[in-house]
Image 1 (cartoon, each protein chain N blue to C red):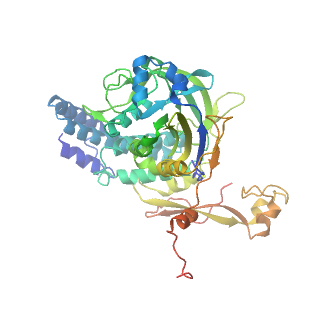
Image 2 (cartoon, rainbow over the protein chains, first blue to last red):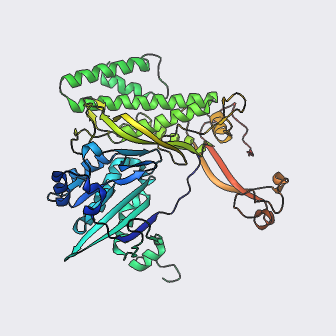
Image 3 (cartoon, rainbow over the protein chains, first blue to last red):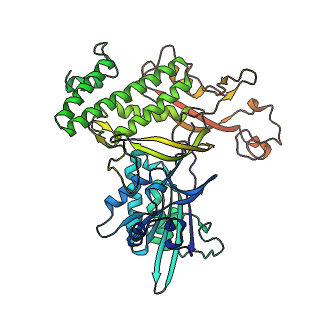
Length: 210
Length: 284
């Protein structure tokens, strides 16, 4: 197996109108589970279908991811999953990219959620953390009076850059894509290192400038 | 056999005596682990699992080296994959003895060998898992009634993993970055249907011929070097450039001193007297 070429990570960000109670997954829950999901700040939600299978599915290892989040979230910040045990199914893809379940997160819990994602990938991958790829999607929910907003950010690229990439994407205004509520949004090319250094004022001066 | 004797055995991986055999060591580890579990000593049971896993890594790597020497490259590839997986299982629990047991060498050189193989595309099955069990308690792994056993953790001297008991195959795709690297694509013979190994293993063959022992240090450096145009006489001016740039030959390397091609430079600390020639070799 030859050397892998470095691929550019991709970050998609788009506003959506799809709040969690609208999702199909929520409708399948018992009243008790719905209450638990509504109380939670971080909720793992399934994808709807894969290939010919039409039902709700989670990526491989979602139970372990859920346990990690529940075990490491600060006290008072509840973590739940939008699935009953009877409906729980996992899709296993034998590609080396680590796929995590989509996370529906309340606005206040976003920094915690992104830290926990990075910590979980570190815990899962060990020494592979620096060279593994990860695919992550978070849907951020914000309530502004009677209005509700959701923004979906998805990332695919090096696992070690997840936290920084998500933080950068969160700080950037999203594109409005009403026609595609949960799908494609804008593609934000990762900022070049020198541009970022320039923006942050940390760019090293050349010998001539000194 | 006591733990210290087993540690000495693992340290001597580069030149083990005939006695004890790896099988005898495995049996001793099983007995020691049973004692530790019976005594409720979980840390000791885990330490013994780590020693056993170190032996697994060493055995896989030595098997891979022997397969390489025999020219059984796909078998070597699989043994290297098993080495990598066993190392990953051990890594999260104990790396303190890695230098003593040569596991750090094995980790670095497993990756080096893998990088020289010509395999680029792999089959990747896609499954829908509808039931899987915890290897420790045999209970189904479900989000709302989770047994509490974490994958990869050690319980009673055994590593926790999941056993898939019900699944549906959704599809098979081709990927360049597989989780498990066993599913290499091979051609089949048109008439007999038998598998054919059509790969060029020259990059693997060169270092394995130059090495006498599995733990002789070696390295490989990847650069680019221009190859004389005389090697590409059959390539027309308007054909794609042999450097794989995607441009026409006349608009790429033809005006240069040669065609830019990957160059692999090997370094050996110990040279095998019957090793391959030291001068540059051109691989088609």
